[in-house]
Length: 178
Image (tube, rainbow, N blue to C red; front, side, top):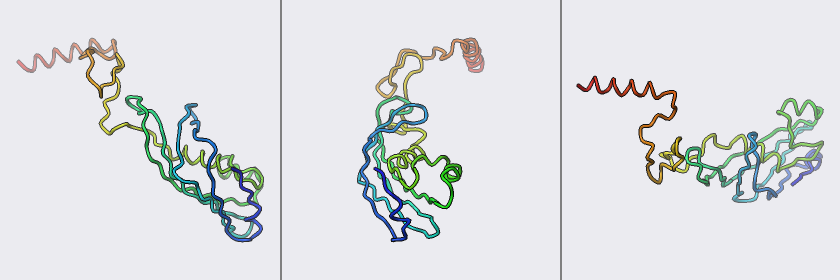
């Protein structure tokens, strides 16, 4: 949804706009697309600060969906964050972009709420999503989900280049146990 900021700049006070986003996916820098659900419409508050400055505020409550970082099962997780950005319209658009890391959510006097939300969602997205804290992940050799059972790979070296070192380690343990 696009919000015209000229109303707030006229000095008429605070502007409230309830926004429901059109998209339910976003694409991270790595190219992977993640799903999310907004739990309630966001109330964007635009406050005129005087001297051609406005502050944009809102809060987001989201349920995200991403693969577990260890076993790759889809996991839903809650995510809540606040957004607060100050925009100075005395500066040129180029100055604002340089100052606020290429403010792609603002075009002239139009605020793209979807773009602002996606930027903030990327900043608050967890670095690692786990299905459970003690997730055992996948076997690096056969790929079986170790949460559902064990595999037959046993003590076979994960990396064939390490086989000689593993054999020396086993010999050392046997000698020390005698």
